[in-house]
Length: 247
Image 1 (tube, helix red, strand yellow):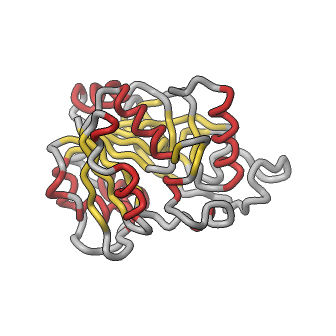
Image 2 (image 1 turned 90 degrees about the vertical axis):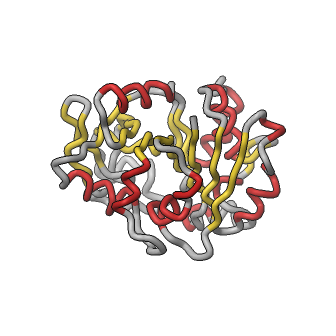
Image 3 (image 1 turned 135 degrees about the vertical axis):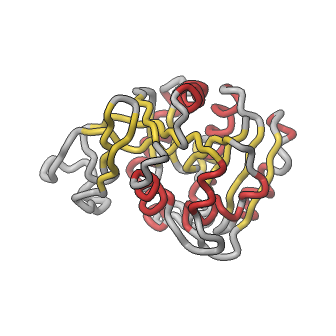
């Protein structure tokens, strides 16, 4: 099994605390954040890894190398310019298997990856994403689900500043959010134009929902979840690693 790690973003919201490296290389104890993703992937039997790198991507490549030290096989696809999440996957197309896992490399979600694969194959979904119920969807947007099939993606209604995150004075709404892990058919890349900056979440997935011949599934799980995209959550992950048996 193969996983693609989207590790090319600039990480603007985390620049105030992690300014000398790409966001997935933010240090957590003695290891970069990416280390914890790789250990989890190996525990799930996923040994073929493709890093889609961009901003300071050479730091990732130099640190992890061929993957030999992890007992895994690592490859790298580097953006010359920012292409967005879908554009980065399109550029990596020659390296991809017919079906592959896809991860946002700044998000940790603990669950059984084989369940995502099994759902995709049992119901012939073109893509399946893992979903998480949270008390406040305003930072993430909401995913609507009927049975195992996703019917709509709703953009965030409230844009929160770093100071507002966690404030009791800001609106809250419980719902399902995108957990940042997918299992995808390679032929979906035919919908992505080459060498263009384009978002998988905001442009390609909604386009797939409009196609009656295609369908996207959702798998709801309750495992430990953390997106380190803002300082508050990055520091929370650092603290959680001290007390929780995540791996």
